[in-house]
Image (tube, rainbow, N blue to C red; front, side, top):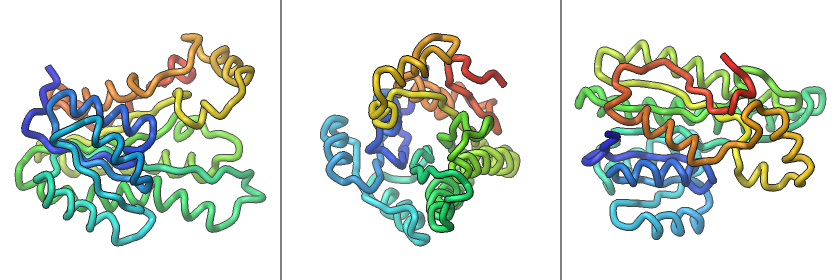
Length: 245
């Protein structure tokens, strides 16, 4: 079950907690990995941990031409990209009345537009091979909204809608497109909170705790596998019951 031997996966935002967990899960199932992000030192550390079959290509996905260059370099180093995990993302939180145009544009560019560009770049090869998996890491706030995150919520909701539209376009070619939408997950962002703040967060979740990156990665692994071949256009929510859809 969940055998990805012979497949190559490109994971964006791989230097973060969720991205790193996704990379480990896919590598553990036999996939070759191309790790990308902007923090080269963290990427190289992860590559060393994963060993043979893992490659690092630094890229700033806010740059319009970066996506095409990244996919080309990934295929030169690791072979055709079979699995794309659109995990790269950033936040520029601010109440809307105080939000600057550049804060809106930067979040949309990285969290939404880069996913579009990368998906477009890998699709031609996937369609020729008649096999592909595209998985986007979205967020609970794409469905619920969150004060101070209008840009982030818009980008994540946009990625969910984009994924449904693309799923319908490419389903006949044996390519699936899905999303994984985490709730509160133990990452550097939640680690910066005080213990009291984390306790309040946990108390708001029916399961009584914050989730782990590995629990998100397990869902990505499923959606990337052949076992999920009949699942497409879906958003799998990983939030401990915080919001039930």
